Length: 168
Figure 1 (tube, rainbow, N blue to C red):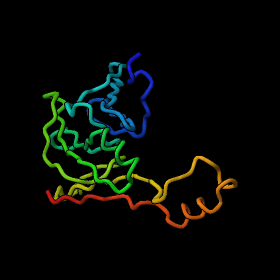
Figure 2 (spheres, one colour):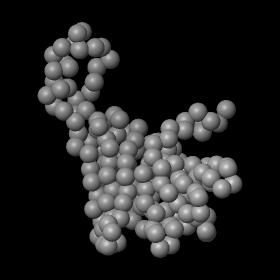
Figure 3 (cartoon, rainbow, N blue to C red):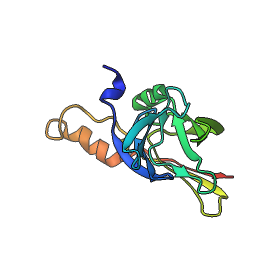
Figure 4 (cartoon, rainbow, N blue to C red):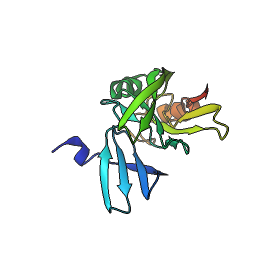
């Protein structure tokens, strides 16, 4: 069985055009496009390789291009080990007509990229992370078995999630 047979975790939807919508999938490297007129759905490979894709993206109302972000899954694994690791993120524009994506920015940010939006005046791109990683490692035992460790986990809190504001 292929891993995409059991890894689909729908998160959000994005209206496209002509009765279509995109469903953002958590920790996945495809988009799910649903066509309500044709009553069908398909997984769309935007061309970011095996990188994970942001789940809530933005459609340019003028061109119909889908703007999204991607990051290497290996960097998510490294970040599980060290919560403060940066992750190389690439921002893309995907043309549904051309069936291909073109990168337009790359830099260090985080993973678990939640939402990408562009300001109404098209001057800024905003990309938010939904990290929710505890600063301290969480023990396998429950709070009743390790109260001092759990107290430290609660005191240290979460690693701050990142926000990218990019001037366009």
